[in-house]
Image 1: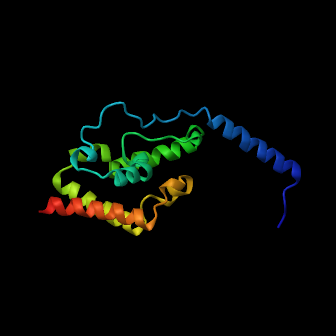
Image 2: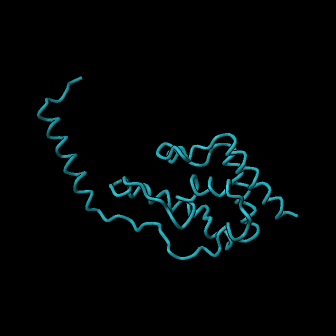
Image 3: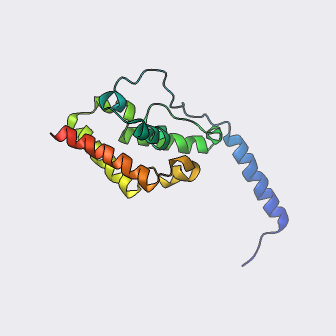
Length: 158
């Protein structure tokens, strides 16, 4: 295997650094921050205990609500595009601030899916937990959230 001379590595590094710098001028997506009261929020639909709501706001709301808490590195490209993609996809799948606009059947489906995904550890996503240690749920927190969502599902099925 033939290695590149140091001068070629330096040149490649400078080119990559230049491209990275230029990429910073690429327009950043609009931030997911709403000043409008979330009248259709799940919080207005169901009485959520503070313990569950705290977990949801810490581990779920950044991608599944109309208000994201942005870390410092969200201002760097391509991270801004990566985060925006996750937020858009997350809100498309489930938006706690719009939960009241879902049909009864969709609400039931979402309650069931949330309970299952949290219980199985599929949510929050590993990529989110890697950067947000506060979103790494303990077994107790996972059980608390799972049981609350199952109870809400059961109350809708009565």
